[in-house]
Length: 160
Image 1 (cartoon, rainbow, N blue to C red):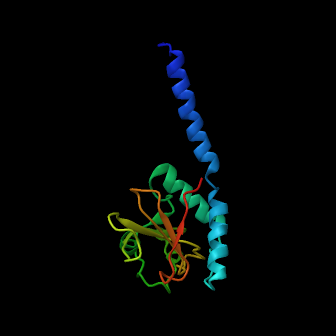
Image 2 (cartoon, one colour; image 1 turned 45 degrees about the vertical axis):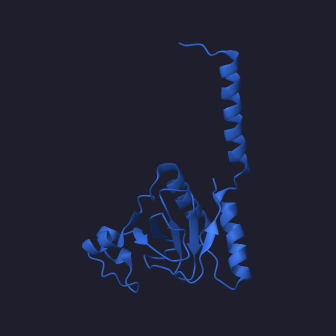
Image 3 (spheres, rainbow, N blue to C red; image 1 turned 90 degrees about the vertical axis):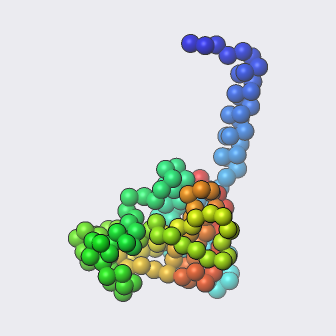
């Protein structure tokens, strides 16, 4: 095992301290969503209902660079027999039972240019899609939420 010099250990300790400090300053995803919900409500826009589920999704994207396994793209769902109609439950089909739509490409002039954006359903109830979507990029930490089908898009700060 290679030993570290005192200078190397000091640099390593300072680096570790900086990482820990940055992480400690970052809000939890639940707190960030609650803050965004307060803003949305003050604007007369519906809030996110299932804060825990969205927080779990945000952390999964951050930690693994992809959506949780419960998500399938709308193209995948259609291949499995879903009509694509928002009035049809994904859970009415055995192959799409308990799945949510996510990972479809999304573009909007309000989003920063130069990144590929994707969307994912939020607040799915009994397999029916809601007007709530998470908009995210795998090439950065920016995340956005809309609860009224893209009429109002609000940025979520990075969270843990």
